[in-house]
Each structure stands twice: as C-alpha cells, then as structure tokens.
Amino acid sequence: MPKGRLFASVMAADYTCFAEDIRAVVEAGVDGLHFDVMDGVFVPNITFGRDLVAAIRPLTDLPFNAHLMVAKPDLIAEQVIEAGANEVAIHPEAGGDLPRSLARIRELGAQPAVALDPRVPLEMIEWVLNDVDYAVVMSVNPGFSGQRFIPAVKRKLQVIAEAVRERGRDIRLLLDGGVAADNIAELAELGATDFVAGGSIFYNRPDEDRPKAAADRVRQLREAMP
Ligand code: DX5
Ligand code: ZN
Image (cartoon, rainbow, N blue to C red; front, side):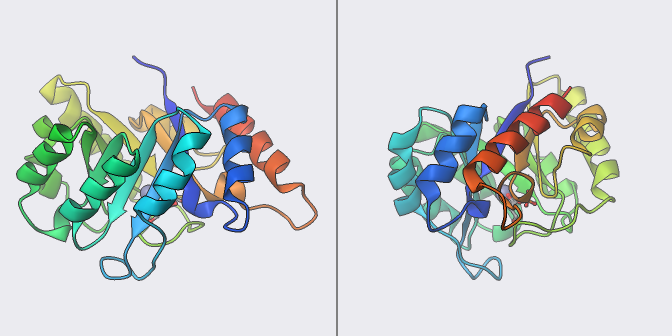
C-alpha cells in the first residue's frame, strides 16, 4: 500500500501573499498542491486558471493536481497542463466525450482523473475507472473552500473503494472537501488514499502568524494520517 499523499488546496491560501503560503506548506511537507479551477459557469464561483498555475510552478517541484470545475474541461485541461499541472481531474457531468477527454489528458503528459460530486451517482464514473489514474471523491458540494464535510460521502467512499478493488488496478482515491486532522484517519480507513486540505490548513485566527500556522497544521494532518 503506497503512502497516503496530502495536497494543500491553493484556493484557500491568502490571495495577497500566495508565494509565502505556498512556501510554508511545501516546507512543512505537503506532497503536492491542489488547484481548484472554477469558471463561474460550472460552479457558482470563479477562482483562477493557467496563469496562476504557471506563476506558482517555479516555487516547487512537487506535483500539481488540477481539479477542473469548468464548462469546457478539454480547453482548460490543455491550458493547465501547459502551465505545469501534472495531474488533472474532470467532472463527468460537464458533458462532452469523457473517455476521449481523459485520453487527451494522458496524451498531453498528465495523469487523468475523474471527480465525483456528492450529488452525482457512482455510475457516472464507474465505466471510466479503467481509464484513470485516480478519482477525486468530493465530500462537499463543489464551489467553495471551508464547507462542512458531508457525512453521506463516507458510504459512497466505501462503495468506490470496493469498485476499485474489484478492478485490481492501482486507482488512488483523493478525498476532497472538509478534510481535517480529526477525520483523516477514519477516511483513510474507509478507503481514501490521498487527501486535499484547504481550510484546515490555511484558515486561521487573526492573531496567528499565518504561514507558521499553516505549516503547523500540515504537520498535524500528517501526524493524523495513518
Ligand atoms: C471545493 C474544492 C476543494 C476545496 C477544499 O470545490 O474542490 O478542493 O478547496 O477546501 P476545504 O478543505 O476547505 O473543504
Ligand atoms: Zn478540489
């Protein structure tokens, strides 16, 4: 069983000092950065795209994991891979030709993945599990960082983990949304192999030294991981 990976979600960092926050979590030992690309059409929020990925790329050699919540995943996948993303997840409900989109991501040199919204049934991704390197299992409704973990996803996670085991392929399950030091061990037990953490790393009290607090929280999450 490969070691679990922890990704810091860039959308939860301080937008006035990205570099400082990113350096702090990289030094504290995250395994990669998670980029939530949102276009205001697929989800009711807008974040960033290829330019931010490209701007942060020189700061670290760690894997960049892009999560595309956009209406045109093919176009944006190409852009973020060119900007330096190594792993790219797309949502099946965005439409289009899913197997073809996943194949194209691989052709462009990145690892393809599907992302499963809590409101979307497993059947939507089950038939492409053989085409992906990992699946993002969302445990909040896509669009915002800092939301509460949706408990019903625990059961879904177990079912997906079982579907992956049946295939006998090494498909990693990246749990995304509401992950914190007090639930990460349980989620690993249920079948999650990798984790995204946004608010539980970057949101802090006004009296805290921000990058230092983020680094401390990375270490706490790591300790809580099995
Ligand atoms: C939500 C995003 C998540 C988000 C996680 O649409 O996909 O990656 O940044 O943030 P937290 O960990 O705060 O729930
Ligand atoms: Zn995400």
